[in-house]
Image (tube, rainbow, N blue to C red; front, top):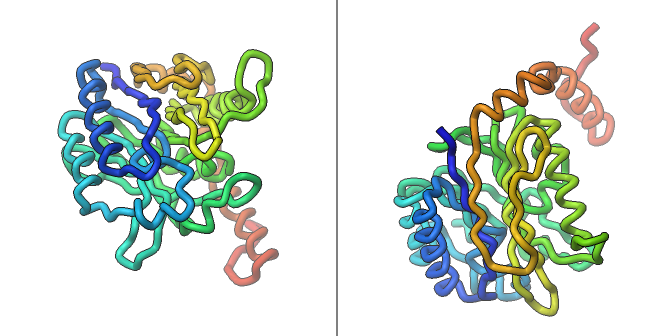
Amino acid sequence: MPFRVGLVQMRPVLGDVAENARRHVMWVEKAKGAGCDLVVFPELSLTGYWLKDLAVDCARMVEDREVRQVIQASRHADIVFGMVEMTKRYTLYNTALYVSGGEVVYRHHKVYPPTYGMFEENRYFGRGKRVRAFDAPGGRFGLMICEDAWHPSVPYILTEDGAMVLIIPSASPARPAVGERVGSQETWYRTLRTYAQLFGVYVLFANRVGVEDGVAFYGGSAVVDPFGEIIAAAPEFEETLLVVDVHEEVLQRSRLTTPLGRDEQLDVTVRELGRIYEGRYGGGRWSEPF
């Protein structure tokens, strides 16, 4: 039986957490009407992206009213959404939550908040320190946020931890055009297809639209199957709901046809990375196998 996913390509209102929470509930209701089992929103969907000093004002704890409003909507369908999370130690994180049945199933803090070029996330957000797959009603998932996907170690760890579906909420700006597509979209699609095929997983990419501080976000949300084929893609620069069915038999067929995961030698990877780490930073106990 297929698992139906809805990717919400939305335009958040910058800094208006209450209004964005209301819109989340509206989109979830629409997705549920389309039969979706899982609804995925973009990065920082509850706040908007280009927050800068607004990050503190928009930060919420998971127990806060607007966040609970979205979590409660997961009684109708599972939800992935983004927020600025304030921890009990008053550290801010760019966070994505997977919620189901009115409860938080998994929380991911962005491991690689970019601070180069036009990006300055690490001025406002802490760095996540955990990369793990998790179980939810639809299977075993891996969650990463935008820039995390530009570090191959993240999807590698998630898939070695058993993830069958990778979820990537994103707030990717439009870059110069390449042919008929936005340049950043073309780059993202190549990356998503590579991960899907190498790791034998579905990849769900939910990117936002809209303009903030003169920066345009292009959308182009997409679903890639385990053979590396883009099976559905949303239009550029438009709010929309992209609905796609994920099939376990496709996962099975891809992994039996090309059993790369079966043949992966994790012990070699761990040992050699340990050797590199020890040489670079010192400490640790790593030895040759002979």
